[in-house]
Image 1 (spheres, rainbow, N blue to C red):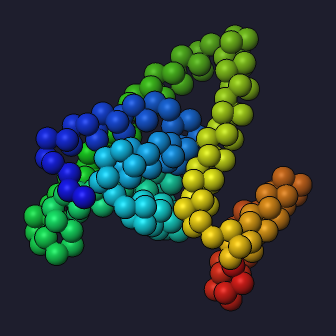
Image 2 (cartoon, one colour; image 1 turned 90 degrees about the horizontal axis):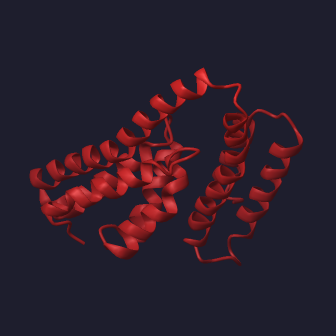
Length: 196
């Protein structure tokens, strides 16, 4: 699972192209990142991919942190793993820089430019239609990401409490105005008790 140094460019280009598709945040592109990093290139294992997302989502901060962890793991693998010493840690830092630059630069430039234009033309029917039309796209991308992370367990008989918790949480979010922190806290408490 090593990453040849000359392929850093391909990692950057792939993440840059995904950056332009990251409507709703970088997490919506996780299925294609998985396809590319795990399936196509073999730079990460399934466990490294899902662990990177889980760890970053549990940590405070923006959800794009998982991209930094993916880059870190790609670089660490390129350097020979944790036992690779200083070389591995240096490659891990390069991986973070390449992945974050790839995912942040194109979308930031596009967002800045498009937002300025849309603000000047907010009364146009096309601008209002675009905003309305993007909602189902974002929801579909989030569902695809959730499905990918759920299927990675591949133990539906054992994971039925997680499915039930997901369904109940979805209904509570949809039908009430309960603050999300209460739901996250409840999920954490159920997990700490070993119920999910």
